[in-house]
Length: 368
Ligand SMILES: Nc1nc2c(c(=O)[nH]1)N[C@H]1C(S)=C(S)[C@@H](COP(=O)(O)O)O[C@H]1N2
Ligand SMILES: [Mo]
Image: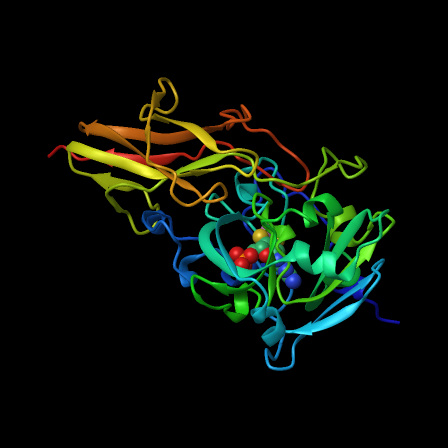
């Protein structure tokens, strides 16, 4: 008999010199990153925001779509989009980053969506807060987890599933967690979860369940695949690990000058150059960004622009650089108010999650 195991790949690490495979390319072509020049926009235009879809974009009709709230609640209910739109409406500017960002830079490389550093975006999400909805339903006093289910379906390492992720109840009840139906002032696009998705400011992308169709309140811990198997920080397959939760601090440099087509090495003419980029953290506000133009030998504080986007939006930084002819490696390093910062030596985990190693931007300044 044929089973899903016959088609589903096990998790594995790439061999020491193994190049990116056609299967990884297939994922990378579906799930694109932000073009780094788009770090210039404070709010990422929807088409330039990164994208991560485990299975297929499901076929969901907004006119008939219903969200069910049930499980350990006093008053289970189902609600349509029109009714959700009549509830209080709020907008949050939120930096979303995939937990796998940085994975393809690891040695050895976990074979999965091969992100370098570009799995990020900063959009305005509009919707209605989740907490009042849960209060209307009346969640049981001994609730542990709240499970969010998408309308998408697939198989992953032999497990057939709907995409499902649970949040601890205290996180689900945070006032800033949204049931979002708009991105940047327009209805959600199909690829970003139309007609309804969860937004959990501060958390890595996997928590922000798209095509949301069910919220299930549980008095026992959820052991679904995306919580118990995937999205854990482990050193090896036998390690139970710890859950991936909030976004580690990261700064990115908007690559200066112009690129070489193949290598994407940056080419600059000598003279004054304003380096800039964005910095964020899901734990606490970014307090400082340092820049190096000599591959990490010396670090200089960058200037932080005013933080206008709210606590969960990225913040612009800039730094004046007198570019003289030569080859350089540029990096920026963010530190947040919790004291967390970015490593300059490569940390490693089996799933390739939360790799916030500093970015390296190779630059050639021409002779004149
Ligand atoms: N239903 C569903 N929700 C999902 C996913 C998914 O595959 N299915 N991918 C998650 C992951 S891993 C990320 S990083 C974010 C990506 O959101 P975006 O594509 O809108 O940037 O969505 C999350 N929500
Ligand atoms: Mo992700």
